[in-house]
Length: 267
Image 1 (spheres, rainbow, N blue to C red):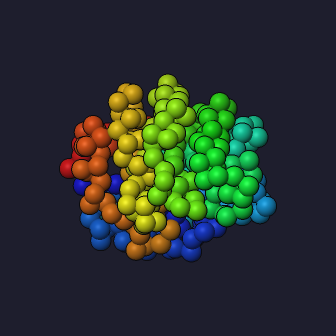
Image 2: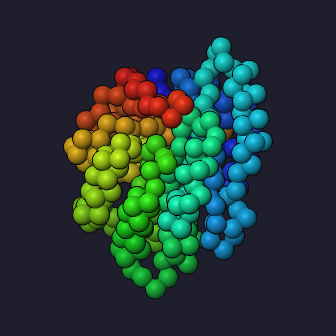
């Protein structure tokens, strides 16, 4: 069975989900365990007050939930940190100061703009917007190592004018390969995020070709998450996950505990 290690609750600005309901949904789905990864996006563009995380309250509530289920269902406590180069003096200290099991580093903002919003695409072609996004990941990797995996590397294609209709790994292989090589050199992983299916892409984030290329280049650390923001999306399309990973060359997937990778055989 599988773990869902990317999910959000009411501690994230874009979710009002009860953590207990998320855990119950995971148990009903037959998962082996979960990890909460609520958002921390400091200096979030035009709304800097958004996507803050009350870390003491977060740990207080989730530790209580974890304690209640410790004999029946494992729950880990992680965080999804929004990376921006100008925060290099802040984010590593936050990641190190708290007992997170797992830290996802993600690119939600590109030069202070979120590709979720149409304004990001104004004045540029779709390909230019996508390339800028990927190149911004390289900018983050030049200054950050305070995460365990990089989240949804092709997040931008969820929201582009044509989503992934004209997108392919091959169009951006030069910059994506450089991202993957740097992650591998740093000992970092990537995730298979099934949110892509929820957003109608017909593929995970990143798409299968990127997962395969990561493995070809020697990458071994791969986590699995549905990026759920409500209970009904926990373990979304997880039935597809084992075959996707095996086809990409993986035999194991990864769960982080106390920031250390634990490898689980794929079912």
